[in-house]
Image 1 (cartoon, one colour):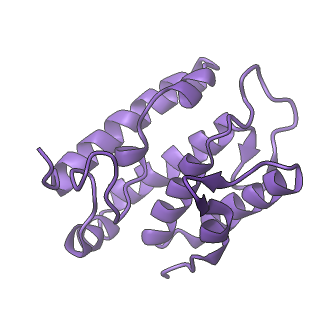
Image 2: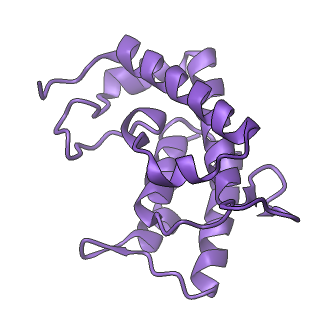
Length: 163
């Protein structure tokens, strides 16, 4: 099915994914963040994907989810844990002092771009800026942000916060 799954399904999938993120983080299983697939519902955006429009947010769904405090809290915590899996403390805008095994960049520029796009879409400017700082740090270390002929760093840095 290629139709949008709906706001309720996005919320349920997002919360379920957050619960997995919490488990992985609490057990130090950072590699699960790197090898699992969850971008579409953990960090929903307003663009089609390999699933077509199944997880593509509409303007109406963005408006509804933007007003949902529990969804916004879940989105923020999901981003915090994802960034932590890469060794970045999002609220301190710095690398983790003593990272655990697998708590490092896993060469997922598209995942970082989707996370930032989702946070930006929902007006989470404070952590968007921190995630952008992480991207800038990675780029200074020679990390490529090229993905399928697109410069994701340009997209990450070019998108402006909605709120």
